[in-house]
Length: 114
Length: 116
Image 1 (cartoon, rainbow over the protein chains, first blue to last red):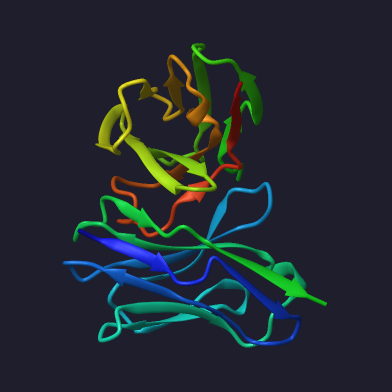
Image 2: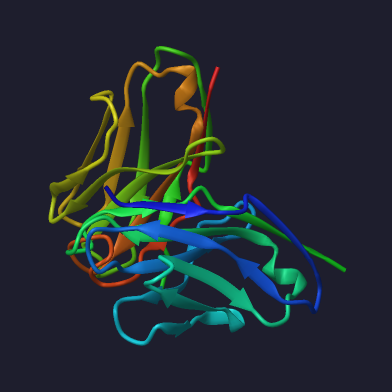
């Protein structure tokens, strides 16, 4: 069965320092992978997606993620954190080869300190 | 272009009651999915509707049901409410069939249900 594990439930960084949010997955298929962000009291927004094209995926707001099949990882990074990046981040994997069902990680709460 | 609209945003019910939540997708989107979000369980998929037909269903009891209308608006209903049903219920719309096929889900801000 497919699964996704976000390795950190909480991450705290200082403004201007790099961000690393870790995600490991398991999938029997060539997976599609997504990162979504949820700001407080808001719905979720797609940050970026991997669908078997380039392994380094660039998203909105300066975020990017690298698909590493050998490590079954899809970590989210940003070179320099901004206060507005404080939010909940979700890693998502498609459950089957047709992307019909999504499996969501439990989320990583990112705090950005001034 | 208006986003996904969910109503009501907040509601309080007591055990045993039933509740109906509404979701209006982005204009032109035909697929609507529902999720339950709780601190301990994260996002759990409830069901997906496309062209008024339920296409996918998660692992929730039959107390959770939904429907979609010809204008793609969707409702979900929870009967015989339990304390554990307290959660944020999120609706997401997309262009076509399948949650990931077209790549992006567009989420509403959710309906926060509290069961006392």
